[in-house]
Image 1 (cartoon, rainbow, N blue to C red):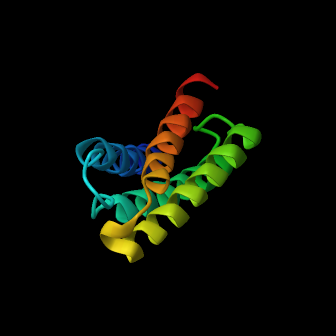
Image 2: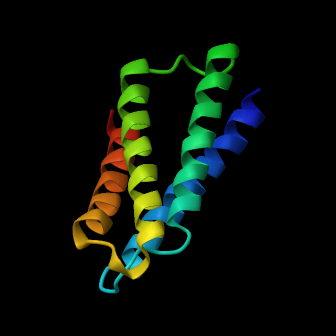
Length: 114
């Protein structure tokens, strides 16, 4: 189970890296990075899978449900904003784009320090 958990952890980190890297690469350009929605969905689904594996397994430490709830809420907001941004193309307000980047950083900070 630990190997499966670790595989989903890698997918989770790659998903957030796509979102944050895409934001950083296109911060001065209109619209959002094309892979933002896919990266956010990858991070969301792999995070949910990690929680399920951690709940089933004794080998992985017990998850902090408050932390997971906050991270899940942020991830859902990022997915919703990325979906809105993808549908609007280059007409995405800068606030939506910066909210995606900011919330991604907040999610990473919560993952590391809480």
